Amino acid sequence: MTQPFDAIIVGAGQAGPPLAGRLTAAGQRVALVERKLFGGTCVNTGCMPTKTLIASARAAHDARRAADYGVVLGGALHMDMAVVKARKDKVSSDARQGVESWLKGMQGCTVFEGHARFVSATELDVDGQRIAAPKIFLNVGGRASIPDMPGIDTVPYLTNTSMMALTALPRHLVIVGGSYIALEFAQMYRRFGSEVTVIEKGPRLIAREDEDVSAAVHAILAREGITIHVNAEHLRFAPRGADIAVDITGIDGNTEVVGSHLLMAVGRRPNTDALQLDKAGVALDARGYIVVDDELRTNVPGIWALGDCNGRGAFTHTAYNDFEIVAANLLDGARNGAAARRVVTDRIDTYALFIDPPLARVGLSEAQARRAGHDVRVGLRPMTRVGRAVEKGETAGFMKIVVDAKTQAILGATMLGVGADEAIHGILDSMAAKAPYPVLRQAMHIHPTVAELIPTLLGELKP
Picture 1 (cartoon, rainbow, N blue to C red):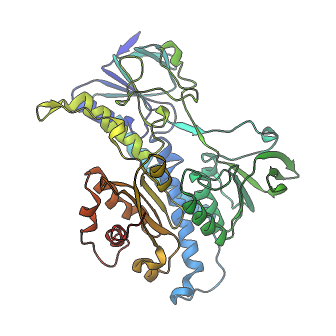
Picture 2 (picture 1 turned 180 degrees about the vertical axis):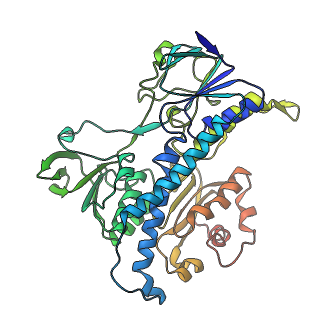
Picture 3 (picture 1 turned 90 degrees about the vertical axis):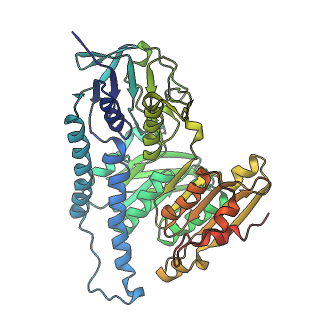
């Protein structure tokens, strides 16, 4: 027997639960299916647990530097990893239980715990139970991608998910990958006390960033004692007793790294392979992401894809914005006498790398702006000339803003430094308001803050 609903949501990540809330508030009967952990990647293996671990690592870092601030601590620093893990687990557990309780107590929402597979474009099987609806929303997320490298099947390795289960400090953590997940774990575990080696296939870390940003991040991590190998074109893995040997072949010759633990952080893949999407006729791209239009509709009428599985964003904030776009277009109707359709292409790219100090980005990088043909003007200031950073004794990094000289539009900004992940929002909000850069340049900001230097940057623009 098939149970009918007005809408089915597959996945309780960042987009699914709030969408269930909007749909049920509109009087619709909703089925929400979750096969494992409520809250998705962010709550369970991503943002919340990793940032909790980063907070513990920051406390250890501050303790080591206490004497610089006149604070004298007695005895050697020791990490109690059981306490670190317990604190992380509680933060995740509380958030996960909050999402689960909200959904299960939501009037009009029926929660199914199991694996959903399509039977047709309007019907799903959830471990033997049939449910159907004219509207289906997929919020199934993603997972670590493990490429087929020589010897990888002969050694134990960790992913961002299995890292969450570690109860002891690795003696030597070897990380393959040089992007966001890799670098956050690298600094975190170095501060905990592990020896850490990062191996990156490309010529520099975080290759999507400008070269000066990559170089600055490389220097920050190297100063903390992290060993970094770039141009690692070919890797081969092999057991070496209880350890793991990684043979690196690159433009500089051959190098061998032997570590106690191996973390693979070389990318993500969508959780679309077990949905039987072919039975619904839903199109995938070459990487397995669900193809959607600017309103997040698939090629099949009545089916939408939100969050990491649609390839239109890989962050919690992009997933939540996906929910906002879909809910607005379905439920909010016309505004001011006209149909106000919300689209993905209206949003401004923004994200952060939560190393310490953090890297925050919005809009176009300098290189991207030049490639796009803009008449670029750049404002640049090292954090050594930011009073707030000097006062805190944290002067690594710099601030950079990019504008179009002809249109006066703010094209983007990069902030690498203390407080960057918060200060960047002033630039983001100005861009969202489509304010020309002189508006922000003339604003009066609070002293002493990092953000107060943004108008100064705009007053020092150069070709």
